[in-house]
Length: 120
Image (cartoon, rainbow, N blue to C red; front, side, top):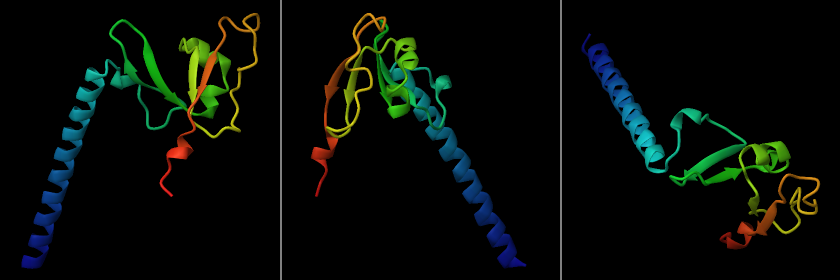
């Protein structure tokens, strides 16, 4: 019947558009990673720590959560020795009071309370 044929055509068109969108966004994402000097193959849907920019000579900017921030090995493995804590003033800077004898290198903390920027 004609209604079934029309429905099938619409479903086929929708599927084709979805495939094209996925291919376009996948390619656009890869191009963005290339421009940021990042390896898109290292990304998964959710990570505790993600590189968001890398200087061509190696310095990297990461965004992470409290799981990464509270794990000294993760910080050391990624050569992170400066942390910007964007939580409120009562949140923990996990290694703020360590001395350099306890760690390979002391971690410097900067607090940026992003909640003060919230629109109320």
